[in-house]
Length: 64
Image 1 (spheres, one colour):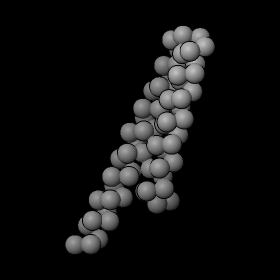
Image 2: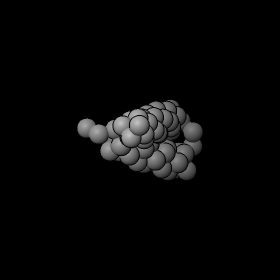
Image 3: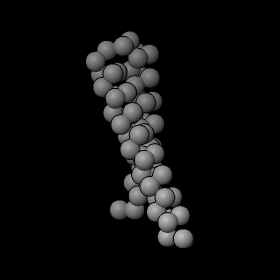
């Protein structure tokens, strides 16, 4: 799969997990599941951004 598409999917999933974590905190407070959702969101957003930057790095190196 292309890095840009994979990066966008990971980024969107990270935002979705962040939303679920906020909903969880509003309903039940800070518990194990809230922290777990935020850890997963952080990993997804980080890997998504890394893949998006990789796409542009590859694209710029192909131009040169």
